[in-house]
Amino acid sequence: MPHDNSSEPIWSVGLMTGTVLDGNIDVALLRTDGDTIERFGAYTLAPYPQSIRETLEDTLNQARVWNFEGPEPAIFAAAEEALTRAQSAAVLDLVEQAGLTPAEIGIIGFHGQSVLHRAPQPGRIGATRQLGNGALMRELTGIRTAYDFRSADVRAGGQGAPLAALYHRALLRLLDARDGKTAVLNLGGVANVTYWDGADQLIAFDTGPANAPINDFVKGLGLGDMDHNGEIALRGRVDEERLARLLTHPYLSAPYPKSLDRFDFLATMADGLNAEDGAATLTAFTTGAVGKALDLLPQRPERLIVCGGGRHNPAIMAMLQTRANVEAIPAEAVGWRGDAVEAECFALLAVRVLRGLPISFPTTTGAPHALTGGLLAA
Image (tube, rainbow, N blue to C red; front, side, top):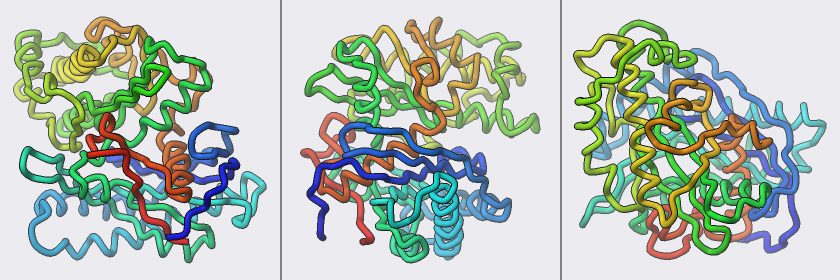
């Protein structure tokens, strides 16, 4: 595969759709050399049409039934084509809005939609499936496309996640945060933390669930698709006995590297509780799990910069202080774009794929050694 060996910054477009199906495609432009950030470009949330949202919901349900056994559900191919076309259109729209042409974009980082992720177990390698047709996107946009960022890592015995550590390090560099006292927490469906000591030690792993069980719990009660502004949790009382029991889950004290699927921790953790107390208890679990994760690091961070949708939830942000015993500030407080971080991450990783640089490491995904990954449709 031909690699671009220059080290000059180029424009890259990153794409991300999370496992919390909020109906949006995150699209961000970034000017980067794959290591450092030269400039943040335009960013947008492009909504999926409702038909694609429904197809993806169905796809996720069928993926869980399939569970990597036997032939893939037929719906995968239909969903993959629909989302690739929608995301390609979103790329071209953003490039045009930014006053650029496709010829000025060096690469697209196309994460695709994760439909199933199974972490490796002792004696069994993991499995992962992201839907996204990089060759089709290359054809539709005319821009080189990097995609399928996780499979090579998983095949080599890694967790395939989290992949954001290199980008979080680039962001910490911008702040000159090199003393290990500041870490980055991403709160999506699952929560992951990145720790950097300012030198060679870069550690990242999934801490536990974030928004997924809370959303599912609220949805299951017919109270909307999420706990907006943490209002339900803030009215509730945490079931401390249940919480203490939940926090003994072996995942939380297991050494990193480690990763989770969106469905590894479920809303059933709040079974039998009313809406307010259930939401409060699930929120306390998410933040208590973050606290346990910080205890595993070589040095316990004093401050977390929080990215991802969960930073909009005041109940989570308040409980990070009380339950995880750490100062927590939203990404915007340090000049980052909290909603754009994941898309920007894949813009940076795409440049690394293009240049043949590693995207995962023993201390981030548990890969056996620094590993290049991703496929290139050039």
